[in-house]
Length: 107
Length: 248
Image 1 (cartoon, rainbow over the protein chains, first blue to last red):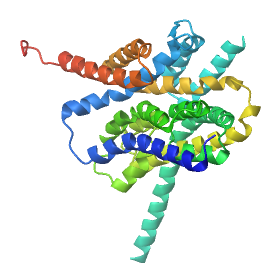
Image 2 (image 1 turned 180 degrees about the vertical axis):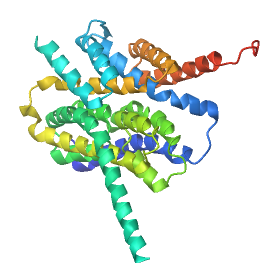
Image 3 (image 1 turned 90 degrees about the vertical axis):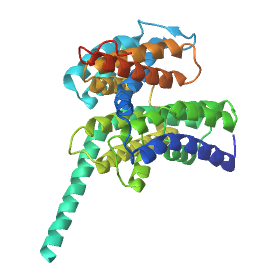
Image 4 (image 1 turned 60 degrees about the vertical axis):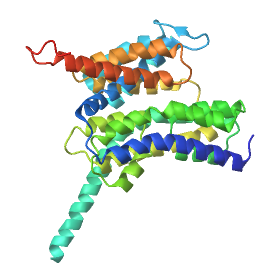
């Protein structure tokens, strides 16, 4: 195990590389008028990011690396999606999804 | 004079209370997803030899779920500092896109407030705030409350995990699925209009395709940038007024 000083250096480095990508754009872009095409592009970023994070987590398996379109995660995702679509409630969807996953795994 | 200043103070206090309450109300589902994840990270941290204080320091200064999981695993494997820091950098590069997107709704805001706000931007608070900023009533103060409520729940749950996480069995109450369910709902909230659905589909397909072949989390950034670009092109083409063909 590393000593406290080493650990703090590590944290400092991690802090820099996580803080800068969060801080730079908001700090420097919010004071200027961005080109319209760029604004339109940025407007599509949230949905693109979420989908890029979510979908692989549902169908890609690790060890061995591969695609599994019948994963439990994906199976539960379908009713969870429906709950989200109709309820529009974040808490309701989380609780519903947890419950359905728990049912699927325990049976 | 005195009366009006008193009235003013009451107004400010009420506004502050409103901002706090609406912030908390928007943030608590995020906390619901963070707590099981934070507890799990805490348990792993403890196994990797991190003390509760060290865990707290990491959560306070880094505040990035997936990076912290990877970092703890790498610490356990005696990886070099440089390797851990570079991995963290790549995994969190996506915040560059979120921060840029948020800058659209935070035009001309106080820079100290923006700095305080930006430190705690995460996938989840980013979507919630982007959604809320579409309403006129939402403001930077409320966004800061959302971010810092989620932040507090993360710090507390990761530290708690180093003490007590091992007493909670795996997947108790389906906890492993909390984050996935949260992302599903956040995604649904973003599906307003055909172009968003199309962009989301493109992004998901590219992400799956590239995740199989690319190391680390590059696939998230690559898929998002490509999908947003393709989405923009499709949108431009489809709303081009009739009678203007042969533009190129």
